[in-house]
Amino acid sequence: MRLENKVALVTGASSGIGKASALLFAEEGAHVVVADVNETEGQAVVQAIHDLGAKAAFVKTDVSRAVDCEHMIAFTEKTFGKLNVLFNNAGIMHSSDDDSQATEEEVWDLTMNINAKGVFLGCKYGIPALRRAGGGSIINTASFVALLGAATPQVAYTASKGAVLSMTRELAVIHARENIRVNALCPGPLRTELLMKFLDTDDKKQRRLVHIPMGRFGEAHEMAKAALFLASDESSFTTGAEFVVDGGITSAYVTPQ
Ligand code: NAD
Image (cartoon, rainbow, N blue to C red):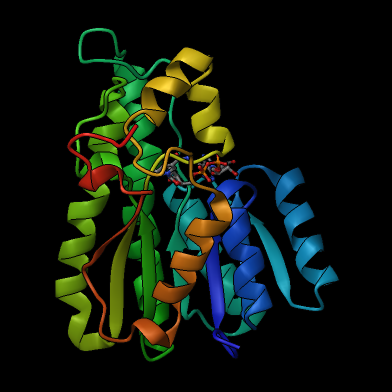
């Protein structure tokens, strides 16, 4: 098992990438803390992990709030004794996120607070716990839009993911000598609730699909596999990476028809 004797904390673990990763990490031997604002779905993930015969616990967390992030880390150490893997994955894409003219300041602030500040707060409180464990792995979910301009305008989301990627690089450099690795997962467009709610018409979905060489949306479990590599000791020399898992979208100039 690839995460035997490890304790992993996954934010945004009630749905999508976070849920798939929490389940896969547990299958690979980790004790998993499921952190999310959505308690009902989060408890269901914990139950599914228990059904696998593995250990998990839920902690209600709004990653944009410092008190919640401090608590989720304390909860993890109290419940399972240590923290080895911190997956800062929670994020939103607001339905009113648009171009710079149409996007309201409140949408900008909310998006930055959850997507970018949430990662900062996870690291602020999580890094001391990783140090206490002798080091560990941090994975921050960015996006392909941190690398390419999106065809569908979503200015706040794009800016927030650029912040996650650049923050990841700095954290990787600063903490490299402490045996703490920090990598960004950059997913392409996925068939999860987050994107399917945003691309809410066939036309919008098609406008995105046309840019993906593989011609399909990615799946949450495909991101979980990448996160597992970054979480495990198999990626022991990987830090500061923009780990792109995107069906080829960032490599495409013209997509095959
Ligand atoms: P999802 O909507 O399925 O899951 C997101 C989870 O985050 C939900 O459980 C939600 O309750 C939780 N969440 C939202 N706000 C929160 C907060 N303030 N505090 C704690 N939890 C909160 O979406 P997903 O596609 O699995 O997205 C996961 C991550 O992947 C996000 O950071 C997203 O930006 C990123 N991402 C998604 C795509 C995509 O196409 N879906 C592409 C690139 C990156």
